[in-house]
Image (cartoon, rainbow, N blue to C red; front, side):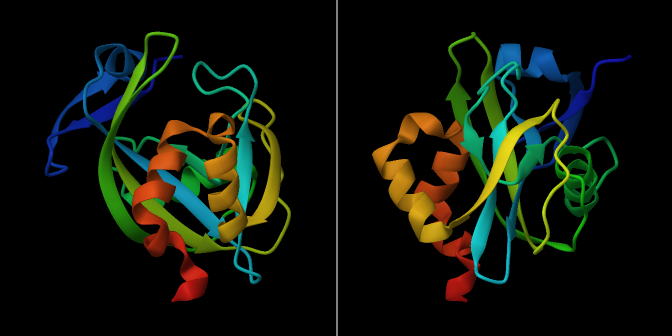
Length: 175
């Protein structure tokens, strides 16, 4: 199977090329990504625990799902595709905010992403892909914020950035 390509972008999110995913993470090259946040009617966020054999951030808690857009794929299309692949369901998504972050990992790889945050609503139970997801749970956004402050080592780098900088944009219950 051919290695997945990521979309290289500049700081204005304009596509400037493609690169194999691992190479982009080895070289810390800026590339496009997305993070999906799914809320239920009680304004609880669906969190996933990353599979224990992921190449970075294994076993850490994070947003509902995340990945990289494919060449020619919109942010929404990519979010729906990955939501189905990881969590076994699809729902309507809307674009929220986007930001650039850079996070080095202990294994020598670096995430340097132009991350698009996508929001959606869902009230069911996911059908987890065990290759991607170890566990899942609903948590109120305020409880997540408190737990990140108390136990930051339990969460992925991008998830902590989103909560630190963009809490008001993802707190859909406050809207």
